[in-house]
Each structure stands twice: as structure tokens, then as C-alpha cells.
Image (cartoon, rainbow, N blue to C red; front, side, top):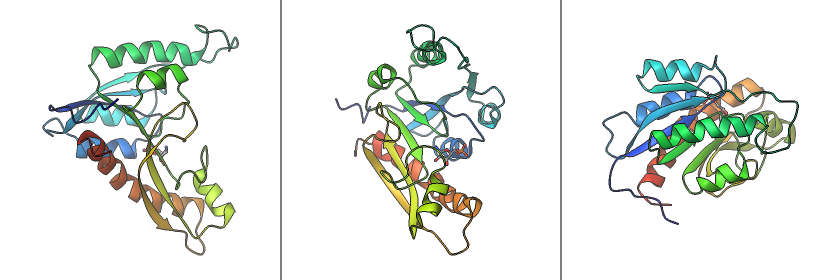
Length: 206
Ligand code: GRF
């Protein structure tokens, strides 16, 4: 199903768990007067996430939605994920969200949630997928000894970092690189790649 272009500014939600540097780049690229779309809601599963503060500073609604730790994982209705998705899903509906951007959101959403948002949920990952999915992608790249890595913006499906790719940007791995230097180099490209990928999606180019 083709969701975009909408013919009106898209209402965008960002989900983030951490420092929110991609959120920053997205807030700059999609302010309230961008005719293509603007960020109207930021959701975090971590109360202390810097991303929530950044949203407040940008005068965007910021919501902490807990992902409770639960000993009785398994049965639907009892897991932290289920509780998170109930509350987040309601917020997304209440705000008439058209597109969800995961930006350093450190949780795996359920197949049901992802399917309900199919074609309308993106993620950014710090590697050239399908290489180095999952956690610590920069360390994985260093340990693999590759000469090039980068970042990927992709549609989210039920897998971990597996959905259709929208765009990638590449960076060299340099002699003497550490996880920190490589992370920094990739992050610069992420901040360009994510807004560009969102523009492509909202214009209906992918
Ligand atoms: C980024 O490296 C992103 O690719 C990954 O998590 C990190 C989030 O960084 N999914 P930030 O919170 O946007 O600064």
C-alpha cells in the first residue's frame, strides 16, 4: 500500500531512548512550518533520555512511556512491550501520526505493531546493512576489519534491522580508528541521511 505523498504536511512522531542527536537533526529539518511534514510528538521509553529534553526545548510534545520490566514475559497483555505499545499506540492515534521515526530507540517492537505501521515506520542504523545488524555495529565493523562502513535508513519490519533500505551513506574506516572516532564519523552522516530519507519517503519517491 502506498502511503505517500499525502498532499498535506505529514505529522511525524520520533521514538528515541538516548541522547537524541538524530532527533536534533530531524527537528531542524522538519520544523512546524515545513510543508512536507513536521515533528509533533516525541516518545521515549526512558524517563531520563536527553531526547525528551530536546523535544521540550523545541516545543514539541514529549512523552515518557514506560516499558516495564516484567517477570512474566510471554502471555500477551503481561509483557513490558505490550504495555508500551498500548500506550504509545494510543498517543500515535490521538496525534494523527502519519510517520514514525525510530532514532536510537533501543527496543524491538512487536510484529503486530510493526505490521499496523507497515510502510510508515523508519529506523536508522550505524552500519551498511545487511552488514552488522544489532547492537555495537561500529565495534562489529572494527572487529571485522572492513575498510568502509556507514549508516542505513530503512523501513522497519518484524526483524532486527532487516526492512527495505531507503538510503545509505558510506564512511571510510581509518587506521587507528576507535569505536569513538568511527561512531563520530558515522553520526555526521546519519544526521544528513535521516532527513534526506524522510524527504524521499514523504515525497513518495520510495
Ligand atoms: C545512532 O547511532 C543510530 O544509528 C542508532 O542509535 C544511535 C542513536 O544516536 N540506532 P542518537 O540518540 O540519535 O544520538
